[in-house]
Length: 116
Length: 116
Image (cartoon, each protein chain N blue to C red):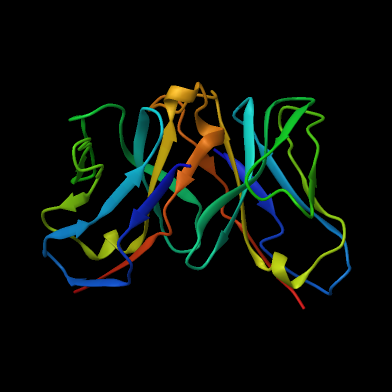
């Protein structure tokens, strides 16, 4: 069972570079989301999607773009990386909008990004 | 807005000790409350959940009771094991706003280390 797969696991960027963090799930989940995890700040929602072709902003969307062309994939794009974007990024998916035991969030193992 | 406050770590205990990790919340609606656990090198996993006042969530020997009068959802375990070493996140979802997973608010996390 693959679940939620994130690539790469580690990435180092220079300020101003662009890159895409990949996220794929094989559970046919409609809901997908991106979080960043920073020390002392917990997880903060960047963007989310409730289905193919639909995306919306979370708590900290600036500097990030997303698209959802298929149910399976939800890539996160950094157009011009900044040191403030150094963080651990998690992708998560769920079968339903409303959280319940039957539809908890399934998280990937994360991407550790360093911007110098 | 909604917020979650959990005890700062790190917490270090001996095997078979009693564990309490405190969590309090503020919310405008009628939140569901969660504990997620993050093992080293992995994403978060749902540990337990409670959806209304006085509900008790339990899983893997862990318990937490939804206390509306004290706005708390403290995590407890009677006898911890080395394998419980992880980071624990308290979270809430304000179900009253008709949103669920995309409105999860996380605490900052508490790192727990169990020594043999």
